[in-house]
Amino acid sequence: MERKNELIIVVILTSLFIAVICPAVIAEDKNTDQVAQGGQTITILDDRGQYITIPYPVHNVVFLVENAMNSMYAVGGADRIAGIGNIWMFEKKEPFFRAIDPDFDSKPKITDTNGEVDLQALSQINPDLVVLWSADWNDQATTAIKEQVKVPVYGVYFTKLSDVSRAISVYAKMIGDESRESEVASIMTEYTKKVTDKTAGLQDSEKPTVYWMWGDIYGTAGINSASNELIRLAGGKNVIETADIIGKSDEHPVIDLDTLRKLNPDIIYLWYNEDVNPSDILRGEGEFSQWRDLKAVKSGRVYEVADPFVYDSFSPQQPLALMAIAKDVHPELFTDINLSDLIDSFFVKMYNVHYPSYSPA
Image 1 (cartoon, helix red, strand yellow):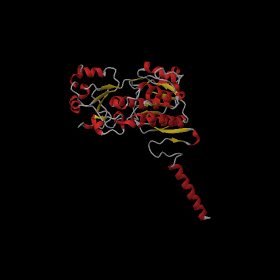
Image 2 (spheres, one colour):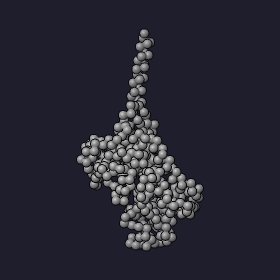
Image 3 (spheres, one colour):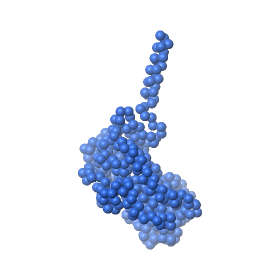
């Protein structure tokens, strides 16, 4: 009898140990999402490394960051979007959003001014989750929403191309449609390979050096950045790799004129800039008068990400951004690619609309 009691105690203690140490589903690494037993909630991980538990499947999500919202649309979650934040260049993009989301105009628009979110409007929506751009768990907007609206906050902070695929995976899981995740991944891979199948075999000597120019002009793409990955996949070489400067591995290092002149890139590539065009640099106007002797300027190889929506590398359109850059970096490799036709076929597969009309496919 004494031996039997000892066995019972061991079983009870073992059960308690398992219950405490082993949750319903254990995340093996920081990129694994957890679904609780019973299908009532899902625990997801945001880009800040924060675990968030929300209803499963989720129904009311407010997106205060636009490119993340595009990923939700791509996985078929239009009806789960309960509110929308500020949209940059709204007039240009609204025809697309209306085409893929019949309820777009009726969805509440949540203003965000200098980081201050309209909490009253947000409260009226009663969301399950708020998604915003943030690298800090304790930033002003996150703290205010969690404390005053009592809603979980998912921080989006992309620094590499794979972050987009991870976001798509998370959104597909939270709405309960992982099959669409596979479809989106397949489409992105198909169009990415249209570039990489041609650039992967290039020798180092065949790769022109590229200076990526952000809006602050001397701010560029560091070695650990998504733009650096785009340059590499497009068959170029980020000129900052050869720079003898501190911080070149940062996501957004800032150099000076002397450093740029020493680097003397073969190509200059501008992120979309409302105030600066490639023609300004090529003509040597204003502050660009001292850029005239750069190889890129003398050869006329100054380009721009002309459409920040279609070529948004932090959205499902990432392969289109890569193709546009690759055609500029290696035009000889992509003479068979008509970019307009490529964009149209991509939008048909990803969003079921034609481009640029956004008519139903």
